[in-house]
Length: 571
Figure 1 (spheres, one colour):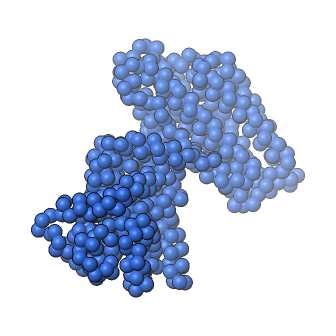
Figure 2 (tube, helix red, strand yellow):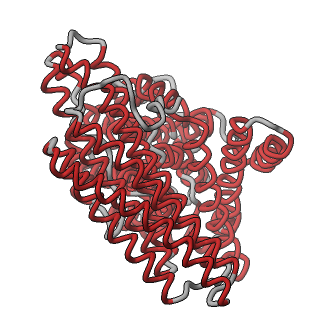
Figure 3 (tube, one colour):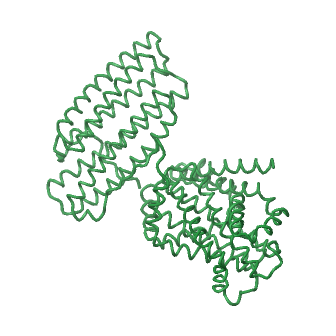
């Protein structure tokens, strides 16, 4: 029991750690190019299903495919709808192992876990020896992949005694004639083994050895089928574990996997009770193999369920997506921001398309303001959770920048009026300035981390100055938001007035900081942290001023702009 407990907890820890490395590495190395590639590959649900099935056949783990899918969704590289189709394919691909066992009893199938440690070694070598950041990020992905499967391996090894347990075999015989109990048992076995392929193979071996009774193969098949259905439910636990560290998009992908499999079992179970499903299995089994070995019929049953249910659900992926979104709401304080109104068909009507882009810029500005508020609050309250929210929100702002910029570039290739052609560069610069605001919010969150780690605190005077500058910046942001939303020059003028005040505050607070150091009212480290914070807040004011000046100019490009040129989407 001690080895089982320690193996399970340690394996779970490795699994979660590897999942985090894998997801972070994918996000850093992939960028917009891989996002578009995956989008094209999985643009059609049927193709996405085939991709999921092929990947699962290659790595011999539907859990691994689903976990990677959750990671891709969390990293923003797949949409939820695309991920659902991939998961449908993963359920089909996992039947490959059952066929190997069925066609060649006792065949040792090579598992991806055999390469877990070499993967960690290769990934570490890439991180240590490579000078290119892309190669280092790729090394991180490989390390995460190896550690992830190493965690699964340790969890499986922890429960290895279950496979040889005589007591378990007795239980299987006892509950075999109760389909619901057999489904629950199959679910439990797969959850313990952390591998649907392993649990199906175990059921096949148990059937071959007569663990389900001494009756004919048809009776044994009838008893084994509910265990197979339970396996399809139990395999979803791995994705749910992966989703513990995922964002709302990743949790929804995991929930789609669970909902799909549970619903399929619920629909098929009445057919099992009526004896219709095992008859279907006997009908679709190749004549040459019919009655030859129970292991083949179990493989056929497994494939029949997954293929038939995937074929039924594939046209309903959109419906499943809506249900999953409703069942998996955003948690309190969690970020779920992404462009939602950039419709490609509206590019044929440029004025409507520009209105859509402008609305998304307003939402992007709101996300940037949220990142800033969380960052300053994290400095004030020493709040590590707030720091994490800032990083999530900054990722969302980056997504806004990528999608809005790409949309505006596509719009620029249309036949535009001179007024709209002059407005486009200003909108692009606005997007760039908002992204820079979010970057400065991340800088402030890093300042908060330094303050927490070094256990520094501000003097009452310094805390009051930061609060005053924060309030001024909040008013400026409110005016900029109003100016963007309504293209109002009055609000933009007020924002520029706030920027002048922020500049004065920066100079005054730097002088008062020097005086406090002279009086030894604060430590030198706390003073450096204070100055960095004030400088970042002032730079945010500069970028907001650029946006306000664009509004005052009627959002018309005059060839001059105070900000850096707009950044291209991440490739």
